[in-house]
Image (cartoon, rainbow, N blue to C red; front, side, top):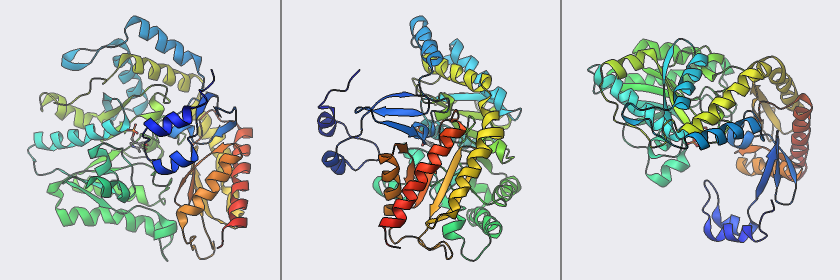
Length: 452
Ligand code: PLP
């Protein structure tokens, strides 16, 4: 199929894009992605790109999986839609809940389905409050989140998120959501070692709890590794300290697994990589590898027991909660991840290989730090790597590298002066080499063109 030649003009006239500068789009024209296969996407001019970002951190099994489209077609023909309200279900929805729980471990018992990661965050937000209310603590309702966290674009999701530029536009956060700092050592660590800084960043949680009163705080939410905030990999001391604090003050721990879930870190879920014991986990993205929209909340036995046996009806749900076609796509996606042992492959093979290749970029003049876990990498650009001084306009530095990579057939994301990678889990060693080599070209270009 060929795109209509005037699709760019139509797009500029009628299509308002998420997170895009529309004025600029109108002038520059839109990139039109036409088809995809494996780890590659192709635009309407036939130009091929290595998708180092798996769409939006989601196409874990890669593109062009006919097994998934076949499963979708079968389900479409048999039952294109039915809901899961009022005690009804469909087979794919139920089997998907069972499958997810089988990988989440014995701590979890139930899944509540949503259409997206944002809705998943709205959902646990209410679950956490219902939980404490039911236990006789209606005042225990504040949610603590982190600066630069990302939890979606709904009103609750954007409130939970710690993106200042999102808050400013929507007069957010809503009451009852407060934020602490992020474990971003490179920029905020000062003279502290990463380990010392990790403890200090986690200590902000304890300070906030003591300031508000533990009897007012329902939950703490964080991504195991902050994704959209820049793949901020926390120092080793951070998570154990957070876990200790949540336990000590009886605060629910919520790990947003929307990016880290389904193999990204070489474990089924990111909290497993860090050995955490969360009470609620929003999921989406890799659950269906983005083939169809579906998300959910994994509910621990602790919370499920109260919600199911004591709280009565949970007055919350979406028309598309457990959509049978989306669930069928997710089931087939998870079957592929299992059968092809993609989680183990990331853990034992491509993850360590990627780590070495990614880390090798630290020898570059404009790279301050290059870290990764599994197939999730964050690379810090620096104007002076000995003093950790940043470029005068950090966001411009990232854009220069990103655009150079794009020109040379590699899609990566830039968050300010951090380059982010999150390729499909099927990426090969040779493709990892290609990714890193092209990125190195982008770094050379930054070094040669932007004054430090
Ligand atoms: N949570 C995290 C950690 C995310 O990265 C995202 C999306 O990028 C979301 C939630 C929101 O998911 P969705 O865009 O499916 O609503």
